[in-house]
Image (cartoon, rainbow, N blue to C red; front, side, top):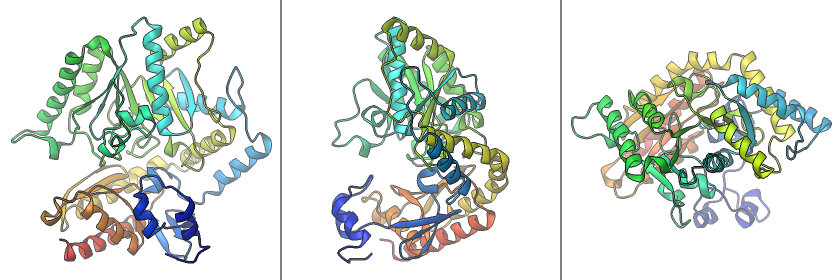
Length: 451
C-alpha cells in the first residue's frame, strides 16, 4: 500500500474506523482501496483487477457497473430526490415496490415495511413482534429464539439474535430474552453414528425442549436464515425444516425468515423459503433487493402480524416507529429497476444453469489439501479448512488463504477458517472457473508453508 502522506491509504488510516476490522492492525496494514467495478470484477486504485467472489457483501446480484441502475437513480433524483413515509405521506416508488414485493412473496403476505439494512429490518421485526404481543394481551410473550451461528445483524437487538461470539463480546450482548438453540451444522454437531435425518430430529427436540423449559406462553418468535450465511454458509441437514416448522405452529410461535442473503435468487429459487418449503409470518429482505447499489431493506408481514399491529396503532394513535430514509424514493426506484432487470434477463434461470459448475468446483476445492468440508447450494458456498499446527489459532489458516487469494486477484471472505464464495448472480461458467482456479492455486501455496 502507498505510504505517501496524502494518499487515500494514509488518509483512511488517519480518519476512518472500519467495520469488522482489527483497528490497531489496520493502522499498520491500511486498506485495499477499490476504485471501480465492472461485471464480476473490481479494480483497486493501482489498476489491479480482482474477481469479487463475495458480490461485495453477499449482495451485488447484477454485478458492478450496471448502467440501468445508475440511470434509474438519476431519473428519480431529478424528479423527487427525497421524501418520507411518515404520517400518511407516500410516493410512487415506495408504493410500487411494496406492491411488487407482496406479489413476489412465496406465501401470502399483507404489507411491506421499508428500512435501510438487514440489521434494521430484523430489529424492526422484533419491535413489531413485541408490539403485537401487547396488542393481543400477551405481554409475557416476548422471548425470541434464534440459532447458534445464525447472523441477523449488528444493532443491539439484531446483534443479540446473531449467534456469533464476536458480535457479543465487549458489547454486553445478547440482550435479555434472546435465546439461542442448536446450530444445524451436521458435520460439527452430529453425535457418533447419527444420521443426517436423526440429527435434524435432534435439533428439533432441542428447540422444543427450550420452548418448554422457558414456557411456550413466553416465546414470541423464531428467527432463522434458510441457509446460514456469515456463520459459515451452513446448509440445513435433510429433513430439518420439515421437522422444525410444525413445532413452531404447535406452540403458536411466529416464524421470521431472514432472507437478507438468500432472497432474490441466491439459492436457485427466488427465495430461500421457496427452496426449503418455508411458511414464514415475516420475511426480512435486503442486499440483492437493490444489488446494494443503494441501501434499502424491507419486511413482509402476513395478516396475522399486521392486523393486531394495525389495531394497536389505532388504539394508541400511531405506529410509533420509522426511519428518515424508510422507503427512500431513489433507493426504491433502483430496487424496482433491479428486479425488472432480473426478470427481463432471467437471472434466476441463469443461476440454475451455472450453479452445477459452481458447486462442482466448490466440491473439488473441498477435496484439496487442508480442506475438511465443502458445502453450498445455488451460487452460495464455502469450504472449511484445518491444519493441526494451527488448531489453537482459530481463523489463522483461513486468514492466510484469504490473503493468498487476494494477492492472486480473488476477493473472498474468511469466516474463521471457512472461505466463503458468493459471486454476483450474473457470473459466467468461465468466470466461475477463473475464480476457483485462483482459489486452488492459493490453497496449494498456503499448504506448502502451513504450520
